[in-house]
Length: 114
Image 1: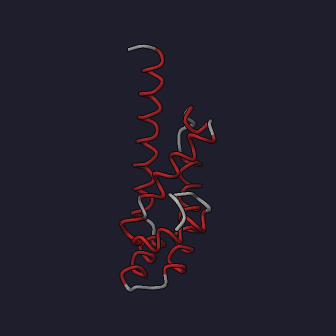
Image 2: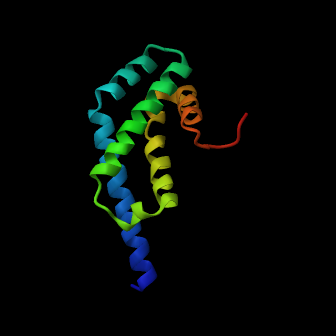
């Protein structure tokens, strides 16, 4: 395996670990559980999205603070890519409308605006 391949594999492994660690934080979060309940009870998408965005910010900050200082986190672009994957984990719990409101609140582009 060449130098470039080793660096790519290390970055993939780092990203995978960060995403798994975020999933653990998300599943353990009482705020996230409350937001999931809001979605099940058909609360307004804007309320769900705003709360999910706030909770995500908190969880992602905790993830970054507690993470090993890998080369992945030294790059803002790579950090943003990991964050996009972490945000995507919310979609199955809060539905499409809540997710759209969340990404809007986070000012993240998830696709073309309709």
